[in-house]
Image (tube, rainbow, N blue to C red; front, side):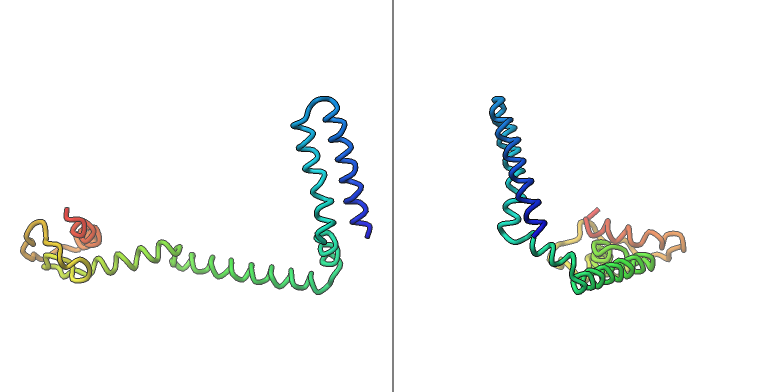
Length: 150
């Protein structure tokens, strides 16, 4: 009841200030002040103020907020642990899954075994030669270049 009275008084005071501003020929500012002054009155008339007051003084509502906060903290903790383990973001995991599928090419194959089988290779496959340990680090880069026909 007190909150409704305060909101109504704020609205009345704001409309009074808007009237004075309009009297000074500043109509745009007066309209803006009137709009701001009518917001608390509208909140009182729709019942939002009463709901907020009931929620603020309700132990059940505060327990609900505590449960929501706990759920949020649990969610954020699991995301942090997932990132720390190297799971990365959802986009990174999807990109890794796609590159794993696109990189499924036999060493001497001329076209990817999974993917666009109808597309011919741009140049013939090089003969298979034994690779050194250092060149195996670039196998994923080679797979990407082959995928794009480079």
